[in-house]
Image: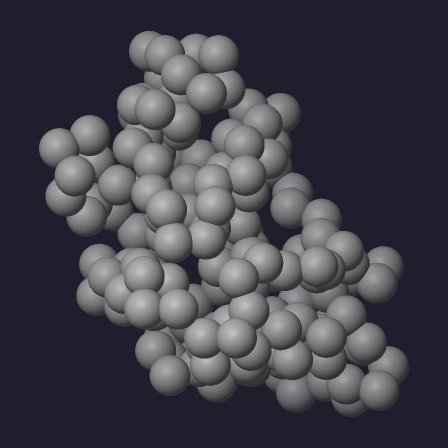
Length: 153
């Protein structure tokens, strides 16, 4: 897997690709990852370009080949999560109902937490059923900032 560090206004992310597909976009606090030659990892260069546009408020959706690795349940959650529109939110219980398993709110929350492709698969758009911001692998402040960025665009 090729990996690079991508610098965002909210902190560093590790981006990874394999077989010309983005398979990792994860917040980091430890500077993990190695630099990559972006001329050979074109999906990483394109991911950086699209993320730059997103953070500049000029992009509301991503067109990238991705491969999110996880269980069949996680895959189903991430697929439905990808349909939550830019600037919108959905609760964990609504997402559980959307995948056809209304009693799986906690499992949906775990699938969101294990999302390997943050922002592109927008797990930051999932909130508590009371409307409050809850759990986010990148931290609540980043989640709040991402939702504010989307509501301002």
